[in-house]
Image 1 (cartoon, helix red, strand yellow):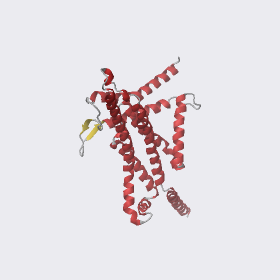
Image 2 (cartoon, helix red, strand yellow; image 1 turned 120 degrees about the vertical axis):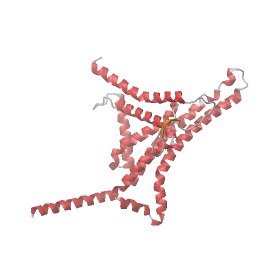
Image 3 (cartoon, helix red, strand yellow; image 1 turned 90 degrees about the horizontal axis):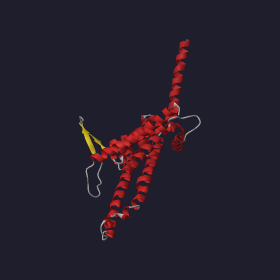
Image 4 (spheres, helix red, strand yellow; image 1 turned 135 degrees about the vertical axis):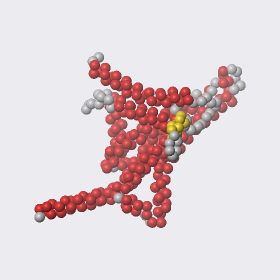
Length: 308
């Protein structure tokens, strides 16, 4: 094995380790800090410590650390998939990376148009972060998407982008939109605008959290039903949770896997629709053309004055 090949494989191992170790770290931290409990327990994110702040103390929670672990995992997975890229795909990882890029780019071009083609990495990041955050519950972790603070942060970021592109045609055009189609709808339009990040965050948070709660309740219910039906058997047979084998796992395929991917796709789709739908492209192009015409007129006037 030559030195280049050995170095390439060493980097691969380090990148894979970088993708796995953050999740292992938060899993270990959860095992070491979670108190023992009997039966089913549904609680929010654990608070590890609090940082004193001037206005309000900043709690560092399980959801925040898990979210950072997921982001590091995504970062190192991207580095692994793009390690050793070539003009002609020679590895399966490059084919996977190109497939992801192609699908995300096509989705952005279809839903947002040519003007927003550079949004593909952002949309891919949202989908990956959302999906892997929800799927982290399969590792026994508290899913960051089950914390309203995390999802609300994403929604506020998206709302900032929505407002930014709505202002592209000028503040007056943006404010005028609140009076359309008739001025009497001004209060309703303001409420609708403010409700955008609220609806996005609560839709995502509510679906993921409800799925986790339903899965936990069904697992506990099947355990109780198993004890009720088989409790009369002697010894270990009476304590064996037979009904908890298989059935909760099948339900988990929907609540933990399918729903996680679906909610990530919905959040990304809403992001694309709200940003592109709120962008007044025709007014923006007209405003841009008007500014360029003024610049040309000023330049022409300066040139004519200099010639005189």
